[in-house]
Amino acid sequence: MTHVSNKHGGALLAIAAAVMWGVSGACAQFLFQQRHVGIDWLVTVRLLVAGALLLLYAGSRHGRAVLLPWRAPASAASMIIFGIVGMLGVQYTYFAAIRHSNAATGTMLQYLGPACIAVWLALVRRTLPSRAECTAILLAFIGTLLLVTHGEIGQLVITPAALCWGLASAVALAFYTLQPVRLLQDNDAATVAGWGMLIGGLACAMFSQPWRLSGDWDAGAALAAGFVILFGTLLAFLFYLSAVGRIGPQKTSLLACAEPLAATVAALAWLGIPFGVADALGSACILATLFVLSGQSAKA
Image 1: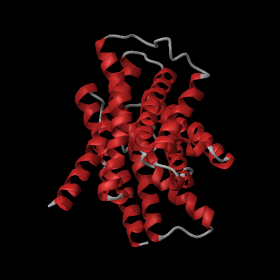
Image 2 (image 1 turned 180 degrees about the vertical axis):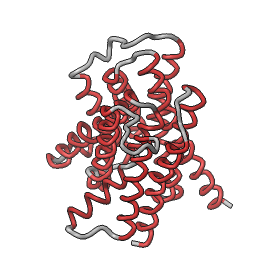
Image 3 (image 1 turned 60 degrees about the vertical axis):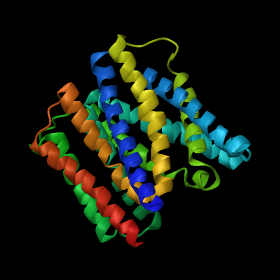
Image 4 (image 1 turned 120 degrees about the horizontal axis):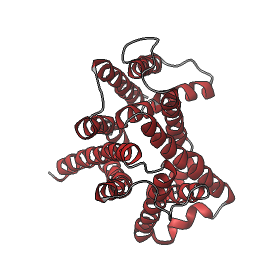
């Protein structure tokens, strides 16, 4: 019974994390487009606050082990690269894609990341992509084409800036996934993520002024920002980690597919974004790449 309850609990935690991530995308769209909050301000505050809280959590569980990434020059350099290029890169490009389009489109474009990883690994290994990888790459291409044209091939229905930021977000997600492998082998995941967030937030703070509020603030803006920082960052990550511990990374990552679905539903119901048949088909193609690549990794 305990094993079954752990499985069910892990699945619920993974879905809850994905839903919180998705809803936080809609909150970000609301802040950018209706309250004119700057991307720099939200990214900086989100990373600094969530990173500090995550390190406090990791420190309460692992004590001085939270300082392990800084005890060797190689791991310290890797940690800094992860924080600036990985964590800050994926956060900023994702929010910029939402700012220039909407939560649904930005989230879906970011989910091209696994296809980018498949291409990169094929290049690094100097091998042709497998049949599953070719299928995933084709599905990703078709899905993106449908999403950015609404099925009217040759007519771009999102701005070039939105497309560029969305594709950059997918590349950043690929880097964010591949680069910290060694760090995660030697350190607790909460420690790596906490330092990454704090470093990324400090780097972004060099070009922004987080102590000065950006945009038009009211109770709605404060609630949306609070959700992004606490639920969409800190709690979502902790729930996701707990799910990985209970049901494993493969099942957890598949259940995380609820994120773009949650972002789409929240943006449709709350912000009234346009979302037609072509968008739904494109989104389905992009999500299908995750199942194809996950099935391949299960056989490996």
